[in-house]
Length: 394
Ligand code: NAD
Ligand code: MG
Image (cartoon, rainbow, N blue to C red):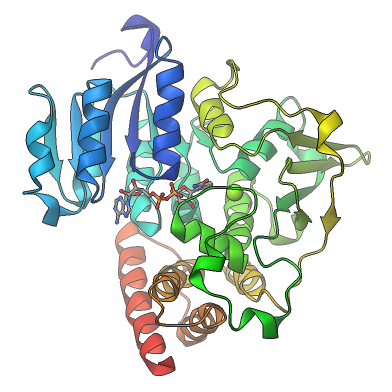
């Protein structure tokens, strides 16, 4: 077996990026570009944007790429792949390209439950997992966390990167609470009645973060915060009540950990995902920032508020899923993915998202989580149920 210690090879950490054409993926490529002396990109995947994939493969001279949507097999863009770059197709190809011996660290930046198989395979392989794909933990946290060795799984989600850093050098058993911060999204302050008629274009205009469409809608419904609460339960081994959601409108406090003695350690910085992405690659070191620094003299105020759980019902649904556990978070996540896509297509209204998710959760007979195959079956059934619920609403 090849030595996985990067210093024994090129001296650079060798990175695979799954979902390299998305918001996180392209920002990760930017981090790799800025730190080319420390990071080497060796494998990339994309679902359907083959032109962007080929451009990145050429720029970084990668050994392998995968196109996870096999229907893109004959895309003309693929003819421009460099001669030395191999190309595979299909969902399993994303796992294949990152498990080679020349990979030290895999960034899973795929959106949705589609990232779960790769996250599990990376942890089982012993390679470092830089995890942006929060749905992996929401759906399969009970299977993933037992696979993770100390220091192997570094969260990329900004709040979880922040919490991870607030725990560094501390005794975890002395923590009293996690304060999970939330921007409040574009519809902060609206009533349930006002939310009934908001459009996809309005939901896509996030005030502080520029992200992929699915997570942007999740941020507008606050499902994103519900998913993140479950993500934090798994990552930090705490229960639902330990994690309190607080609106922090400026998105400058990325989260906080409160300790027994009343001290609260917060993580602050620019609202730029390249910072937590880079930290996942540099950990435990820190490198020159990719983002403009925050000048606190110009920031003005930091505002806090409690979330409005009556208007934003996804928060309570996620709380129920997290408390119940088993296969219920998988069902919630799958129904949410289908409902968000339907909302973006104009097939349902904004508040129908939580109605569809709730209907699917109500109809599900919860089972203990046992295997990835079981979760794939539950996920598929929940998607069918969500499609039926959507048809019923039209
Ligand atoms: P995105 O939609 O911009 O990009 C998704 C990427 O996944 C693309 O490269 C796409 O090709 C790939 N992909 C899509 N469907 C796929 C499938 N079925 N199989 C394999 N690959 C597929 O999404 P994003 O905003 O970059 O988010 C990626 C992940 O990171 C999500 O889980 C999201 O919750 C998480 N995250 C994103 C941000 C952010 O700022 N964008 C912040 C925190 C966490
Ligand atoms: Mg986040």
